[in-house]
Image (cartoon, rainbow, N blue to C red; front, side):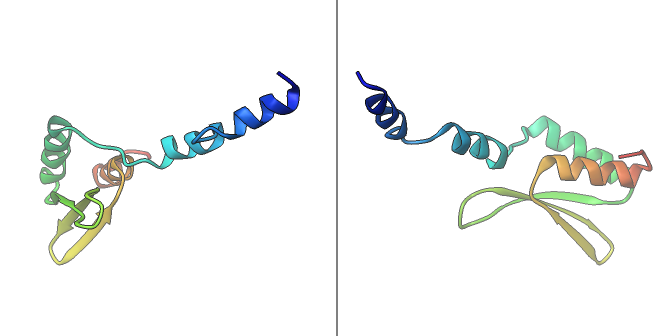
Length: 92
């Protein structure tokens, strides 16, 4: 096989290496029930209510943290953990 043939075979794949890395970074990260309940209990100790809402268009979860009349919406579990660290007074 010539080098030109090899290049064509590599390009014909459905997803390149760069695209697969982007997908791995941007894909929705899920949290199991135990992790969610633990975070909800930690927020509740400080007077916050945590709820998980699934979006209707794509089914991805969003996390709503409410206290009094203010609600913050997070789309990734690591953002939720960072906000919890701020609430608890820990360095981020």
